[in-house]
Image 1 (cartoon, rainbow, N blue to C red):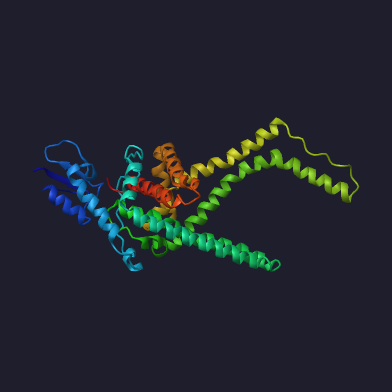
Image 2 (image 1 turned 90 degrees about the vertical axis):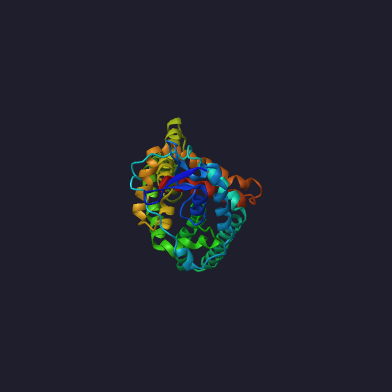
Length: 353
């Protein structure tokens, strides 16, 4: 019978032990599919989920997580915070080679029922809030001036208050991948674990991205917008000051190139920063990190292979929103699949291997 040695979350080796003992550790959450393991007599290390005779224990653990009841707020507030690996900023990573797409798909398939219920609840809450907000804004717009200001403030408050909700589906699958209880109640973990930090992250990220877009928008405006501004000034002078009739602005190839180039310059920082900070919100909710520390850590880790992470995010995004082609109903199935893949990448990047 094969004997195994594993490396625990504290970095120490445990074993050699039998496969049955390793399976027991998996079912009791002392080990996970990503725990490093070595068969006695082998030279290299692998992961528990890659050992065929241990696969049954992993599947059972996922199914047990899926069958547990929805917790109260206090139960998911007690979620263990896994320590960051000491070499997190220096070690290499490969979201493609690690099989994050397949791993996410496997977890989603195992938890198909709970994940579909979770995402249905997510969309239901989101749609209800948006409908309520639009209704309130229509009523407020009937009030001159003050109503408009209140409507703008309401939209801002609602948009910020939804940010913690966006972290919930990812947190659900992060727990599942770690073989921890994956419950629908985790959808609201962002509110109980890191509400303030989630809001600060949303504000700071939006401000930085908006500022970074301004040079590009300025170029686009002066390439095309400025001739239009002069045109409207000429109209005003012609009507009210008796000036000559204005002529519609003519645009040269240089104007068009400047406009398109300005838009491209405005989009580049959005793409770059959004990819760099893609894992900031999970870090804030999962590990209860300060929002700025989470943004910096996400940026440093992603920048090791930024383009590979960008391509991965692009593929996951296409998968997640491909369900929109089926009258939108398909999103109930493709969005959680995409989130599961994204969560698998997060665990690969920031957990012990």
